[in-house]
Amino acid sequence: MTYKILWAPLRWTEDRHIEPDSVGEHCQAILADTLEEITTVQWQTCDALVSLTDVPEPYRSQAHNCRIFVTPKVGYDNIDIKAWAARGVPVCNVPDYGTMEVADHAIAMYLSLVRGITYHTRQLIQSPSENWQPIGYKFSRRLSTSCFGIVGLGRIGMATALRAKAFGMDVCFYDPHVENGRDKALGVRRVEDLAELFAQCDAVSLHVPLSAETHKLVNAQILAHAKPGLVLINTARGPVVDLDALYDALKSAQLGAAALDVLPEEKPVNSEHPLLKAWVDREPWINHRLLLTPHSAFYSTESMYDMRFLGGQGAAQYLTKGVLRNCVNSEYL
Image 1 (cartoon, rainbow, N blue to C red):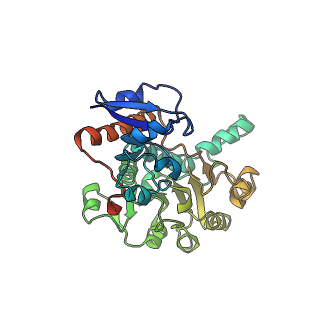
Image 2: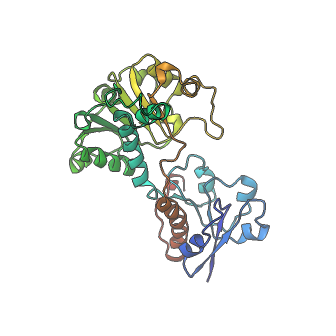
Image 3: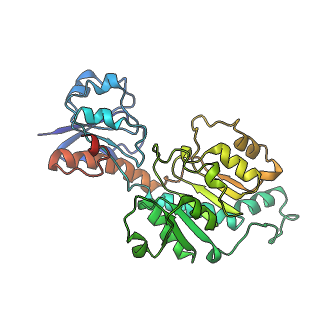
């Protein structure tokens, strides 16, 4: 028997051998560029769906033969997992494709800020001779004197902790959902209260999924407890941080700097938000204190391959062997 796995739609135009290779000999990969080009028969006969975004209800209702839905990424807040569960369909993600990249990115952002990488680069672009000043950056610090805090000690949080430890930093974490003992295994410290974590750390890196619990988790109340000069790093999800509160904390100098790979509003970015507008206009108070990257922490050639291959592989393993991994809606099934 040949199972049909439908990519609805496939976002990538190159290397289209990856998806067929991922599903093995007992499955057929059906690739579509848009939802509209998928035929009614393809919807009705597919055994699995793979998609970065959710499938709207008019199409979902046609996929009555679908046995599994795989979103080939870590986050699944844009998937209606309850609706799929109501149809008896498990929803699975791919939590391991960009773990190392995001952890690397978080540490790289901190290094760039405390070592003045972007500061010196911008200064030298303006005038290489006049700005050849190695001691001009006032935020430089020795890494081994830093206390590095992590919010969310899952896969990426743990990988980030190990990297911070390798630089000799004192690493602590806040995560009420982590069992006792993980701190001992990693050689890091548990902090029981989020405000307490912010009060003792020189840097705090966020590694939590977006949920009702984590929406605006970092808000004005939490930032008020921040140790002076703290660097906030967010490579998780934009809405985890209250951007208005971050603006106030930076402008009042409660925070030393922030490094954001994600924003509450993306595609399009809200360029009129006071924080972003001040950054774009290079207002003196924010100059060299905000580092932005375009939701690129996950990206590498290797991670993109893993995303595409592991998504198809996960669907194929369930169809051919009954192996279900990384199911995110089991509580509703």
